[in-house]
Image (tube, rainbow, N blue to C red; front, side):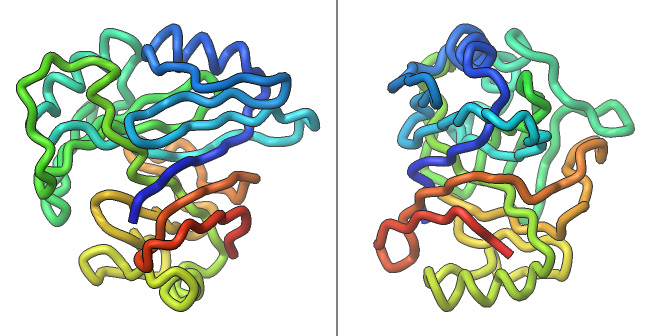
Length: 221
């Protein structure tokens, strides 16, 4: 599965531009009065201006980086934004089942971003790490009322299956290492510090499903 675009709501597009372009160095693909788009490798990160002032943002997304450059990516990120530690003070994490290293950060709106080096991918490089090393958006958080029901829907509708055939009632990653729908029960606290609760928020996800078809998802569970 490949995530082509995620579109999240934000209260201020100038803040988004300052952080994502000015801070992280992401190229601006386009900007209007209502939305701004950034290039993240092979994906697009879009922020839509919240004109209602009612969206309390708590989105989660992850960006793939070269599998051999986790420490370089972490150092690059830490120069630009504080990293989020877990309750024990650790700010880098190894997921044994996924064979991946990750670190986390907040954007100006309280969303949790993640850089993840998946060692199961063939993405090693010797190039110096920069914003051009960000490969693609590989995860988007999907809070739902019924995780297992959404798993069934994803299988029937898009041909997507739980990653590594693992699923539970409060957390299931759907897809593969190129693109995952991180499906969690609404209210579950996001990793790594357990301070942000997952909530159902307006969003748009454009992805290429297991059948090679383009799908636009705007509602889930």
